[in-house]
Length: 409
Image (tube, rainbow, N blue to C red; front, side, top):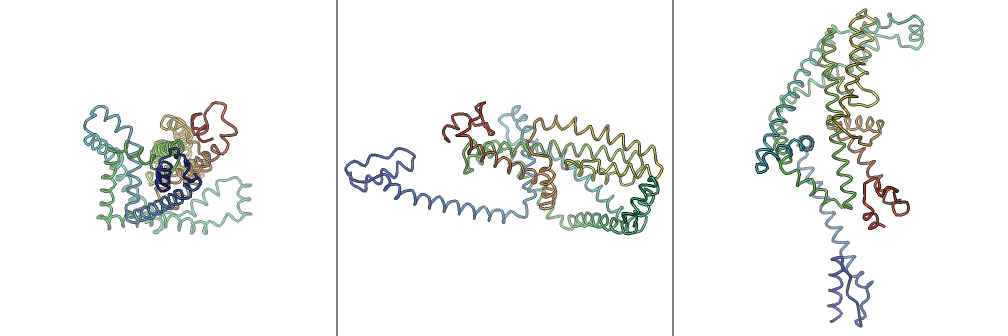
């Protein structure tokens, strides 16, 4: 065999992962073959990765107008995939029909109620904004009533610390509430003005949800296999992705909705105006660990006590502690079922940062980024320490088998 033939055969076998043929008397050494093949292979891989990066950026730019719709379509498909699989077991040969039925359930059970509640909240927010602008709602008067109901020693401490300037607090709080209400009203008006764009994005979201439901059991594994990571690492990251999304939506999301609904009913019972708006604020606060709905109902109860509405204040406190507070402890273990492994402080920071960065979608995006950050560092730590300090139980943080660790070692 000529030198060229030996080189070609060696290069081909190296690229296939097989052992190269012996050089024999031809004088062709293995390092020489590596110098011939590996640099070219690296250039090809680098070029392919660069192409994929550029085309991915271009794809994001092309669909940027529908990123929100695509994100929520993916989340809905991921959350309702178990329901789709359950229905598919009853009609195994009718994937299109099962996906359509699942999409109909999502629309009736989630989308339509959300649109109705959103329209009611916008109406109440617009009413509050109008009352603030007209002077019917005066926060300085409310603050003064609370101040006068406090013990004299506490009143003196507040006066000495400069917290008795209720007119300035009235101006600041009124400006904040007015800005929030006007922003909400402007958003609603912009949706109405751009009804065609809203309906288009809504239709795209439903359309993509249908195909993600139908083909999700094939798309998910294909994406995991395409990741440039070890199969065990890619699987671990995918499991964490699914766990965080479902925990955030099923756990935090559903519990927040329940707590907000209970709060709205409580405020309606005691006769507070804009009870639905207060309930929405309580649901948003319930998404934040270490804060929770108490940040809404506790000041309301304090104000009711200060203004002499004793039984209303007692009802709010009892509902907040015994009903709203216990809803989290009862529902979250049932809906989530397992811990996502994210510290509460990181959930709080990433949720607030996500909302500030991408809006409502940040409720899911923020904790997801934090969870993948922690998981990625755990995987890196496992890979660095596993060869020297194997786990006594035979499994690392990622659940890798001993044979997998042996291959890495």
